[in-house]
Image 1 (cartoon, one colour):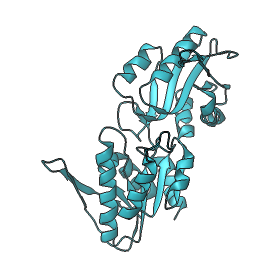
Image 2: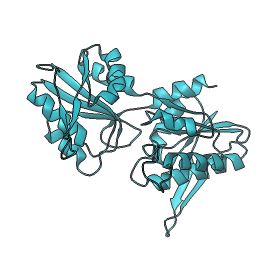
Image 3: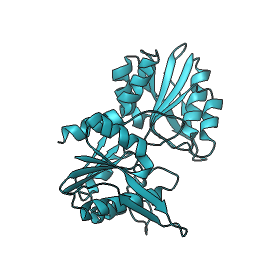
Image 4: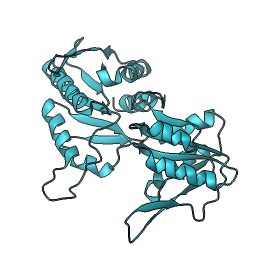
Length: 293
């Protein structure tokens, strides 16, 4: 197998190459004056199985998706016998069903596009809805980076921390972290006002007084849920509050708002390159790729 370094995940791809021992194929990329992308594989893939590592997080998720498709097409034209797309953050994955008449299902459209480009298998990390993968026209799998995030906090001296889900629906994430942290686990509740339709979080029955609490979620986008959770935890007497997510999009001033709400540290993975991407997905991806060969 060879690892193709997508321009959006160059450093991650190089780490995967180093851990697996699979050769790395660099990619030459440029953007024309009219905004169109150009990619070229800078190495032979003739007769090889290849894994293209390319995240599709904001900004420019549309352009990153097109780059992924172009790289897959280039690999197949270059004689690759199998193309696996490793997409740590999959754009449009939250649009996995129709809510209103006249809508499409964006994630299925993306999957069909990638199939047409030459992708044979698909690997992602903590996709928002695993059901979406069932509609892909090729084998597709999601991995969980929650244990890696929990291990980060263990290494920082927070063994035994309370793993908190911001709502009941994400309890499976908190329980994955609890298995590593070894502390208690729980979730906040959401209550909807029957007159205004607005929701608010509550901590009824939750005892976090004097505890170190880690709020865990798959994606942090605008940060509103984390801000609300942090304020409640501080009111409940939590000693330390951290938050961890796989995909730290942190749109706009989300990072500042979360810190201002009393969170001491935000920890994400390099599915989204940036200041909070402190945990690398390379070991997780490398193990999966080596196990598949």
